[in-house]
Image 1 (spheres, rainbow, N blue to C red):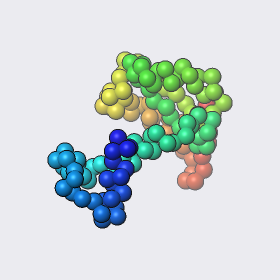
Image 2: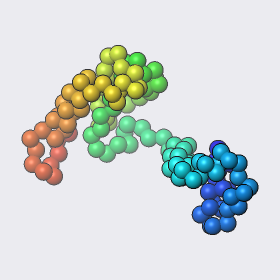
Image 3: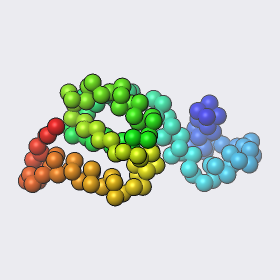
Image 4: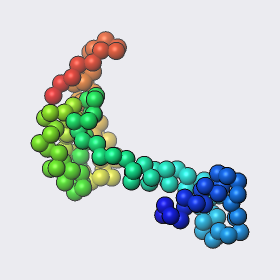
Length: 131
């Protein structure tokens, strides 16, 4: 994807793109203006360094569904370093990756508990860190 789109996007940015040299599909993708965002997203995903829980400097909630195999594999990989980080992992039984975003009745209470544990009744600008 990178080899295909990078020269096309560079030519478009430089106003030197020959639109007639593009396939109908590529032309439609460019005209929809989605490729810039998708290309930037893909590039960031491929080029971003690996971040470990210990790298995070603020409390973070890692919410996982027990039926999300990829996330559960990551949890297994990082389980040993989590107690030494500000990351709190919470597994919600029976949720897939999509359900982590759609099952609000199961997810919201976990989010609220985390927010209350981190911020509680603290004054604005103060933060307590709890594990």
